[in-house]
Image (tube, rainbow, N blue to C red; front, side, top):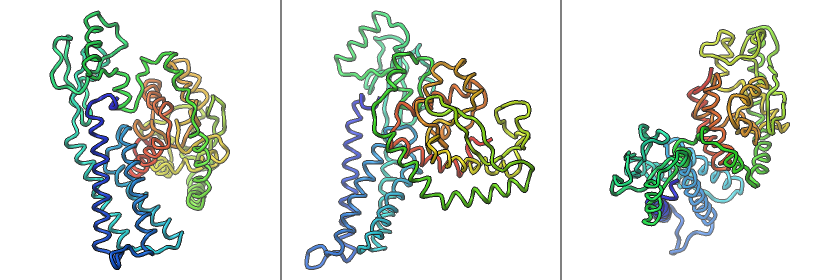
Length: 418
């Protein structure tokens, strides 16, 4: 949506100038306050440090710019995480290469980039305002509040407010000749016209399920190499972090076994990629007889959940055995949560296009999990499906990276657990 707006090009230009200004200022700090200059030339041993810092600075700036195309990305947590992770990788790369590096400069680099790009995010949140005229009578967006947006409703073509950045119109409703002529006039005069679907998708990270059609579902088919890379990253991370998650899994399983009778590991059939069933593994967080009356959604304060179970569900420790599912290829680190077979059969009947979420491997965490939390029932599942389909449609490394950042916040707060 933003690509159609007049201010978008300025936003890109501002990001470029801001990043370039930061790079120039950081270079001045490095060459003025650190011993990297001798006889008016850069000390040879400092070359890898300075060039590495410049490269990682550019990568960081580009990543932040790409992240801003997704909802909820212009947040302090996201900015600081990106700065911290790129700075940490720079430090590890220099240490691994055993080249000269200055802890003082690296600390300065870390502090400066955090402050500089946090300030950019603050300025965007404070001053970057888009004014959009919304045609009444379509999908109800004019009554909602969105960050950095001012929505101005209007009812007739001849009452279009002046000085707007674009017009939002619901193309799912039948347009009269006056509105058709209005759209044509806007196009001729260079006034961006945005569909309600495009607006909602860009601003909320969700799909309007009521407007889904067969033609639109076909657009989810995309040729991309990223799923192959994603599978490689899943394996790499699951194996590399095994010294961390395996001991926690073992200790937790022992605690669960001591607290209540029954197996420590819970297994269940779930539906995965392309609708194929697989066995998922979790640390048991409920009593062993929790499904004696059949499968049921967990509820707030569910009596079936044990004391240890409540803790491990809050911080998602019960999901750790699913790293084995990742290694086996049943799951991914990030994707729609896999549902039970009986629930999927019901949702396929009640929710149109529910099966589209099975185009990708299910995940331990996902876009719907970090934005909506737990779902119990058909209505809440439909809301989560709208977010799952957004993820399927926009599947990319940058979106997965954003989900990873927000998952950390979810784990720390316990958001959505039951």
